[in-house]
Length: 121
Image (tube, rainbow, N blue to C red; front, side, top):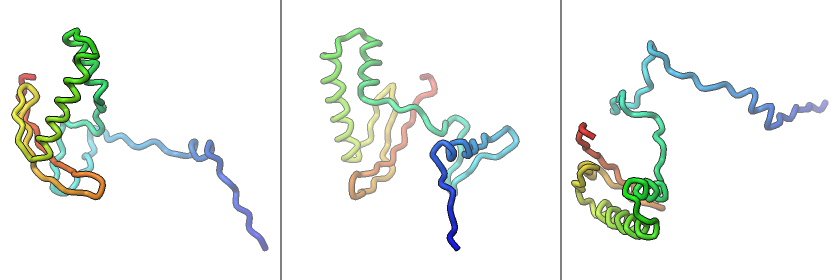
């Protein structure tokens, strides 16, 4: 006796997926051992890329892209080198960035930092 299996198409799979439940006022958020949940932190913040940074700088001061781009690239390079060396950065109004932990991985170096910012921003 042979058994036949029904093949599920991609569209059928997509329709059977249930949406994730959203926590309500009465439910407690998931916690990870040793981590204190914060009311101010969102789960997934939007990501700013280098071109977004350049565009925002151009919008704020009206400089030309050809003048801003090399400065931003140099700034990011210098900041990356300083973080790689474990230096503390005190760059107001961004805040004070302190290196807490560094771990070498096969493809990258993972650096855990803490940034302290003034509430006036």
